[in-house]
Figure 1: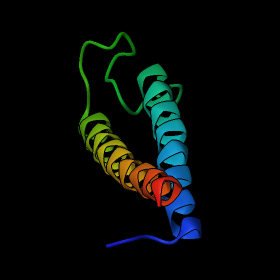
Figure 2: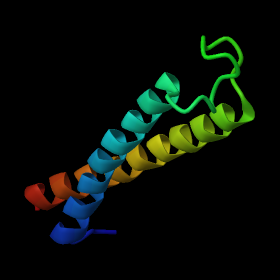
Figure 3: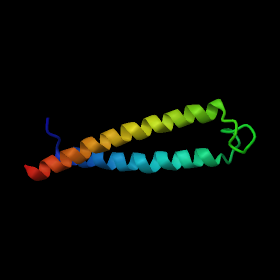
Figure 4: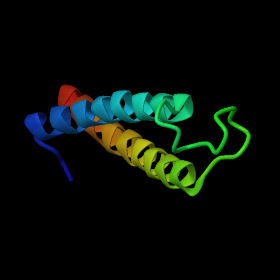
Length: 81
């Protein structure tokens, strides 16, 4: 299956966007300025909030990288053709 140029670039850009957004989210989750992710603030007792949001972020990062790889492969295939 061949992807069009705009679709390939969109998927590659989505992968980059996903990396930027979700890595920032994980950094902010780790900093925990609101006091929801850890019970006593010293990162010793993660809460359910932390684990659910970490799972969300990791899943989104993996899917974003996969989508980005598909986009980059599409762009590279179009350059060869």
